[in-house]
Amino acid sequence: MADASTSTSTPLQLALEQQDPARREQQLDAILASPAGPRDEQLLRDKEQAIIALAQLHRDNRDATKLADVIRQSRTLVEHLAKAKTAKLIRTLLDLFAAIPDSTQAQIDATRDAADWAKHDKRIFLKQNLETRLVSLYIDHADYKLALALINQLLRELKKLDDKMILTEVHLLESRVHNALANMPKAKAALTSARTAANSIYCPPLLQAQLDMQSGVLHAEDKDYKTAYSYFFEAFEGLSTQDDQPNAVRALKYMLLCKVMLALPEDVAAIAGGKSAAKYAGKEVDAIKAVAKAHEDRSLGDFERVLRERKEELSDDPIIRTHLAALYDTLLEQNLVRVIEPYQRVEISHIAEQVQQPVRDVEIKLSQMILDKVFHGILDQGAGCLVVFDEPEVDKTYDATLETIGHVSQIVEQLFQRTRTVAI
Image (cartoon, rainbow, N blue to C red; front, side, top):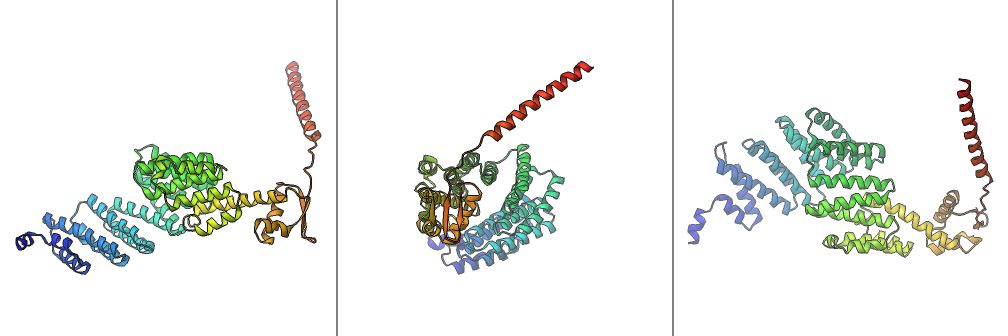
């Protein structure tokens, strides 16, 4: 009976049942090498499954080079497939790179190669989709110059075709690039263009969540953390509904970060322990909770320790890194104010010892605080001391004088108007 069932198995089934990776690869290659015409529907279906299975095998082996070869090999197959099926197959194969560590460059090369092939084969829709994916990869790889060049090219093409869906995605990517380059006016303008394009079509939930995420990022850059929190919450809800765990975790992290930046660290534990956030618990969320605890305790030492120990979850994210740098500065300032509060004259070395920071860094920060009028005083560098002055009394005479002059100016203006009316 075993022999009978084996004899009726197709070559594809035999290949997929093969436990030895080398033999499975060999049998899948044999299926793909079989000649097939446009009317061999069963063989074409088998080849399609075989090429996906072969790509998955290379993904499991973490071999990005062979995976790229499979994508190139698939072009002979897709000549006999419908264009919609072709686009889906190539996107499926390219998605497999995500599971291979340090494969961004290989993915860029494979995507660019596929986009060039699609352009040569006059598959315009597929080309634009692949180039949009390529822009995203350039951003992840910090190749912002190449990303902007490709964005400008795509925008020219898409405005002629009036494809609002891809136009929304490209404007969103444009906003991300300008944000990464710290060009906030252009980042906001691109996001406005993305939202305008999205309002004229049905916007899929994932794309809407990405728009909300970018809105939150830009509001956070403007220090409007309350509004940013609202956008991140909307993005988190949308991503949770679509089971996009990696991006949902990012949105949750940014939500919690906004609470920390708003000096509400006690809210972090409550949000992280909520029903919707509980399933995303892990080291990413724990890292923000540790930051919140250090902020709540006003402990600069704990804050620095968390940054060292949780580098992957915190400092490796450029958005979180930017805001934590500002938070560190605020925390340092709070600690310095607490140390110098009882004194009228205190050694800078003593202050540095209390906050556990280098003397030079403390001296620079104190100079900045004096210029910003956080407190009144001078640095006596000859003696290595900080001299703190009492808060000066504000003389209100100047303000009262300006107010009086303002009232007199209004009266004179009214008299002038009346005089003109009488003269007429």
